[in-house]
Length: 555
Image 1 (cartoon, helix red, strand yellow):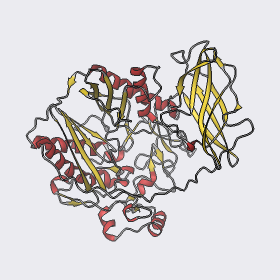
Image 2 (cartoon, one colour):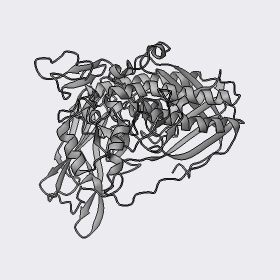
Image 3 (cartoon, one colour):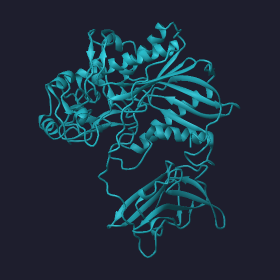
Image 4 (cartoon, helix red, strand yellow):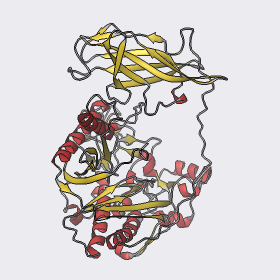
């Protein structure tokens, strides 16, 4: 669709500013391992700068915006079972609603607002910090600082968002803050990027086998990356989503989970003595590069790319850089442009994290020694960041000088993946049929109420309804005439599927009516809720169906 909708662009405007209340560092203990003189150069343990590009077509019409801001999409806790765009998805939703208006269905209007990621490896949206949920003896107290534990275990330590344990409100609040700030930057953007200064570079690098020159390492000596593996601290999870099985953050070579390490090494893959020494002090739980079935369990040949438009440089990095790791990478790229003779005083350098592939986390050398979650998830050993700095320096120097780069050799794709989830064999329904109502709504509701309607449905995997919707909230515009006002992309709606027996399904559609009247919630208006999906016949393929609730009014 994007390819078919290509049109000529006009200009790009850039703006940036500091958003102060939308992120916090979830690995503060590891961050403090970085040199004091380095930390004193910054006013916070997270990057708070949002960089925004305002995109216009050749006629000066706004067609989109993209911004880069570091914060994890983990406002929804790991107990959430609903598909969600989390805080960045909600931020994009609000921005697009503000520009496109309510006449355009959510997610399908002409203006696109993209909320991109940056160096968010240790950055959380849960700004109140980690608090113990259990055991009872420590409930409500801050988690133990070094290991983020409660009563010696990780499971009870959970970061709290602005509204404590209410992850729906947390998502809305952190998303709203990003969206409002992005809209402000978008409305006040005046600096136009020079379209005559455009370039890009792209290459593939085997990050598991990079020799790093001394000028890029933290030790001042040559370094070497390692075959990829994840440590015990990876299994401990983070305060945004604690792990289990007695793993804790801060697990290193002197503090390991010997039982699970033995199990993983003898059942999956056992790292060699050379790999263990290379990854030190990380205790290798999962030697991913050694597990080959059905394919290698981690990427090692990775795409690195960078592009420049005027004074803006975007660094496309295939992983999650911590705050300080991202700062070092940006400084390295900036230095390369300066070494190429460019005036970098007015240039902006942004990291576009998790681009085109995924190599887990990238911590600094000092953070790696601590082996919190980000360090345990740094695949290629203690010199991983240094290797990225070295390779991106080469790319940046070539980009600044207008030189071509070696494209490298792309990885061989794996065509042998499989799933343990069985396919849909058949859907059945009672005599009332698919889309008939099992539990209907009331005749009227008030502001702040929740409308629930349960239909006899089907397995929703039959058709994901891409560019359409399972659920719609419709308002009556004339006798027998209905207009859709919300779909399942709207935050006010929720969709729940449940198996009933072997082949039947119940689908519950909910509308959480807002607390105030607005463009959708209108006093005295008449509504209904509809479900659209496909059911599978044993020998007849997929068949569409639609069901409607009774009508109801908003008082």
